[in-house]
Structure formats: structure tokens, C-alpha cells
Length: 212
Ligand code: AMP
Image 1 (cartoon, rainbow, N blue to C red):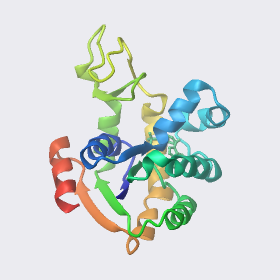
Image 2 (image 1 turned 180 degrees about the horizontal axis):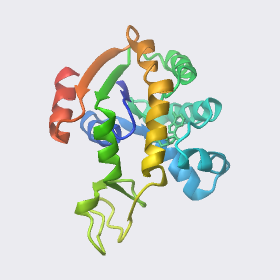
Image 3 (image 1 turned 30 degrees about the horizontal axis):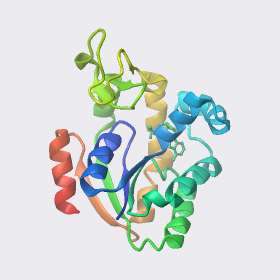
Image 4 (image 1 turned 45 degrees about the horizontal axis):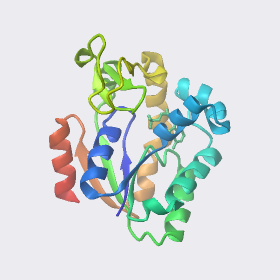
């Protein structure tokens, strides 16, 4: 099964994608995670992407197309995957159409998670991410000398640079301008599932699985 998880930054795509990937036995491909890893390792892509990601911009479509082609064509994703953070522009949706045609993907599933910008800004302002494994927690749950419950790293929870309030606002603006219109592209190409992202994590997952 090929799934695209769609929605604004901070709406819970990453959290749901991880849970669904494990429940459905498919791979989780997060373009944001791939870029953060490239930036951490100082690769050529990382060096090109660093300033753009940190200021909340969109990395050019050619770079993103290359990343997603490499990821999807690796054999381990043949069982299917859940794409988190891609496509974010119309040009990326066209690149994905081509890859899906080559992989004989008939009808992908598109899960759209909705929430108001105000709720998203509150949520992102309060989240911390594990620098080592990418797990996300709420600020209040992270104490001094905290050990990550997922990867056991110590004191590894940080605020993402692009989670600063002015950067979140830019990311949301770009979402409304460039990404939200991409939904139209899938209206008759994908099986569409829409859920309310303001519900509790478990409820959102159940609502998605019921419709799948
Ligand atoms: P995310 O973790 O999905 O919120 O992505 C973090 C940042 O990585 C975004 O704000 C963009 O700067 C960049 N990024 C991730 N995916 C894409 C994409 N498909 N196209 C362009 N930029 C992206």
C-alpha cells in the first residue's frame, strides 16, 4: 500500500505516520527527517538545504525529487510506504505521479489531517524533538537529565530551529500557498481519507484505520 500523509506542519503527520507504518507493516519515509540527517552529517544535500530548512523555506523541487526517487526505489520499500512531507508542491506531485507509474502503483491512499493554524502554532511552540532519534515530546514532559524513552539518549531533547515562532508562521504561510492546493491534484487520483487532527493521538489513528 502506498500512502501519502498530508497536512500542515505540526498537525501530527510524523506521529501518525510512525504509528501507521508500524501497524500496516510499511516503511515511513519522512523527507524532513532525511533532510535533518543530511544536515547533521554535512552531506552535499545537507549543505544546500541547511539555511532553507532553518528559515522555514522549501528545498528546491529537483533536490526533493532526487531524494524521494532514491528512497522509493530502494528494494526495502517494495511492500509499500507512507510518505510524510512529500509532495509539498504541484511540481513534486508530478514527479511522484511518474515514480508511482514506474512502480505500478494504482491508487495511493491520501490521508489529510486538519487543524486550525492557531492550534498548530500552540502545539509546535510546545514541542521538543530528540536530536538522536527524532521522537517528539511535549516540553513539560522533558525534565533535566531526561533519557529518551525511544532511543535511551540522555539530554537529547532540543527545540528544532524551524520551530521558532516566526519560522512556524512562514512554514504555515508556505503550506497554504504552495502545499494545500496540491490536495486538488489527488481528488480523483487517490483514495482520500480526512481526519480531525485536534483529537487525541489514539483517536486520530483509529479514525484513519477505520477508513483504510
Ligand atoms: P518537516 O519535518 O516535514 O516539517 O520538514 C522540515 C523542513 O524540511 C520543511 O520546513 C522544509 O524546509 C524541508 N522539507 C521537507 N520536505 C520537503 C519537501 N517535500 N519540499 C521542500 N522542502 C521540504
